[in-house]
Length: 206
Image (cartoon, rainbow, N blue to C red; front, side, top):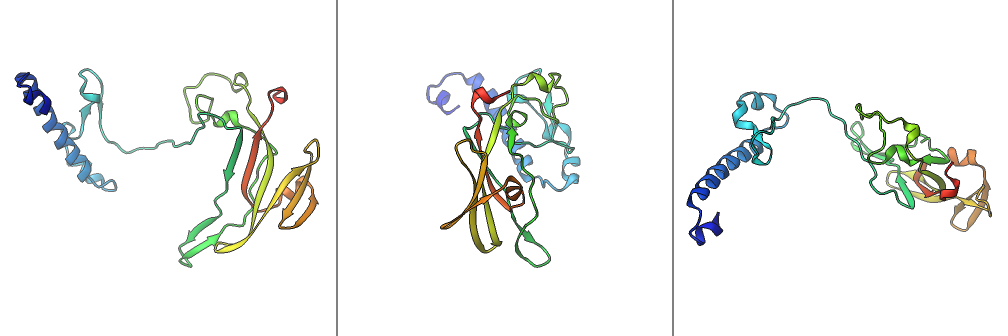
């Protein structure tokens, strides 16, 4: 609008744009002033106050703020070569009013199929998906290392379970200078803090 005024052109267009700008600013003021936890505020405004056409285009449906159930998910767009998963083991305990550590066991597979967690793949929350899961290519990832935290929410010691051997079928526990042979059952019983998966070769995807 300012550019059109400087060039002294399009006075009719300027009037339309200014009118639309006033409406948009009024709408933004209403939405910013609403309390997200107060249903009465939405009910006190009529549809014309809190509704608007998408991008100002005529003929498209109006967007009206409403409350309801929703699905939330985090999907992977570009699968990495190495997948690092962090297990959140700290939370604030309201009873003690302090951070505490969660020590419960976390179940994790030795081979993870990442295809179910990628964008555009079949997911349980996509009700309109008609493609069978068997039609999607598999993205197998092999667990290569597990970082374990021993201690409390305020301090402790980190140690690592990692694969060893030529064929990577054996496991060892590395803690400072100590290296001990371990089994897969030992790895599953640890207090996993970080899981590191590596993408398997294409020749192994069967």
